[in-house]
Image (cartoon, rainbow, N blue to C red; front, side, top):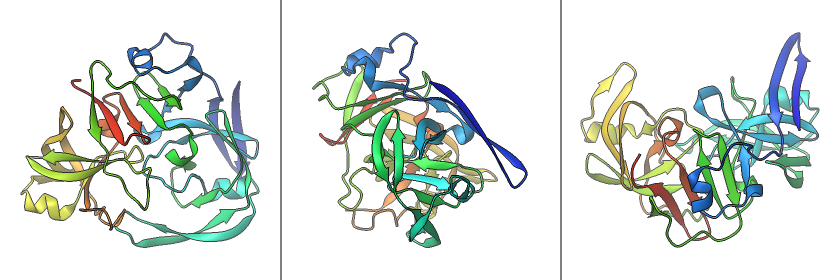
Length: 291
């Protein structure tokens, strides 16, 4: 079912989205679909929208829209302050929104539970959180998409969410162990390297640009320009990337109890370039062996 929603708020018309809600892709199967053993019902359409983020179909209290899928968002479902009011959500509490350095940046509203569906999966009455972002209508995190694993393919516009166990081996892909967070078990953290320096990095679809810790950039004497820091070699698994303008961001507050701090956040600028799978149940990230 495709629905276009637009609402007028304060004299401004907000065109929320043209949503293909709960639909599977009509296009031919991608090779990874069969290789990972997904069924047709596991495959869903996504859009690659503003900031290069992958957008998923979401229904909140009967209102359909497309929201960015943010793998760094552990809250669940959040909507902008404008949309919070527009939907008539009733605040029953508040929460502190933290930045990646662990600092409180805002105290925001938590709505009374309303019916929510994500990718056509009915979550039932679910808390919805306010988001203070000037450009985004909201966010959806991995805690609400269901299944024990997912595969994301920006280029073909698909996400697969599965419950059936994955194969032990998949041709053309390699397993990279996850570094698990006890505080946030659905964070996607792995070990990688920058210029042969071993470090922890997070895969974060909610970042438009890859980010690096400022102290690390100085320690490695990376070249700084007007647009950011140049990383000549960022390696994850078998793949190596050049990042011409990484943003300097402190991410050490994401989970201070990890064995070492997260020093790099890999954003949609790189994650959109390959197909990748996260298996939370076995604790691995599946990466292609080549681009």
